[in-house]
Image (cartoon, rainbow, N blue to C red):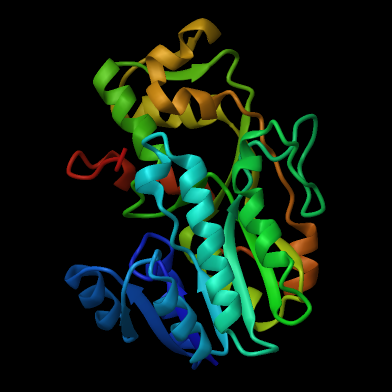
Length: 305
C-alpha cells in the first residue's frame, strides 16, 4: 500500500516508517522542518512538507494514499494549557484526512489508555467516562470511528509508556526527578498500575491496524498489562543508588510536578481483543526488563518534559 504517516519523525513514527517499509509498503511522511525531512528520508520514505495544521496538505496527501497512520498531535500546546485546542486541531486533521482518503482506504490514529477505566483492567470495549483523563482525546477517536464503513478506521490506544532506548517520556521524567531529589518516589502505597509496550511492538500494531483490522476497531497497544508504580520506582532507585520511598498523597504534586496527576491513576488494561482482531503478539522486552538494560540511566539522555 501507499501509506501516509503524520508524525513520521517522532518517537513512535520513526519506528512505524521502517516497519511499513520492511514489508513492502511505500511511505510518505509529513515533515514540518528540514531536520524532520532529513530523518524521514534517511529512513527510506519520501516527505510531504507541511504541518498537521495544514489541512489542504493533509487532504492531498491522503488522497494520494491507500492508508494513513495519524500520529501527530500538538503536544506543544496541549502541555502548556491548551489541551482542548490541541484536540480540536486533531479533529480537524482527522476530518481532512478522511475527506482525502479514497473509499475503502485505511485510517488509524493514536489514542491513550491512561485513566480509561477504574476498578479493573480496561478492555477495548470500554469507553472513558466523561470525567476521566482518557476522555480528553475520545473526541478524536469518535471522529475517526464515525468514518466507518466508508473507510477502514481504527484507534490504537497506547500505553502511557512506549519504551525503548531513546524514550524521552514519562519514565525518563521519573528518573530525572529521582536523580534530582535523591530519592526514587512512588505515590501512596505504590499499588497504582501502568501499562507499557515496547516501541517496536507498538509500531507493528499500527502496521497491522491498517492491514487487517476491521473497520471501527479499537485496539490496545498493551504488553505489560499492569505494572505497580512501586516496582518501577524500585528499579530506578537501585540503578541510581538512592532510597525508594513512598510520597504521601498530599505531596505528590509538589514532588512529581505535572506528572503527579498521572501517577495516581490505576490503569491496568488487557489486549485480548486486539490479539484476536489482528494476530498481534508483543515480542519486545517488558518495561522492567528494559529498565534493567541501563540506557534509561545514561545522564546524557533525559526527559523532554
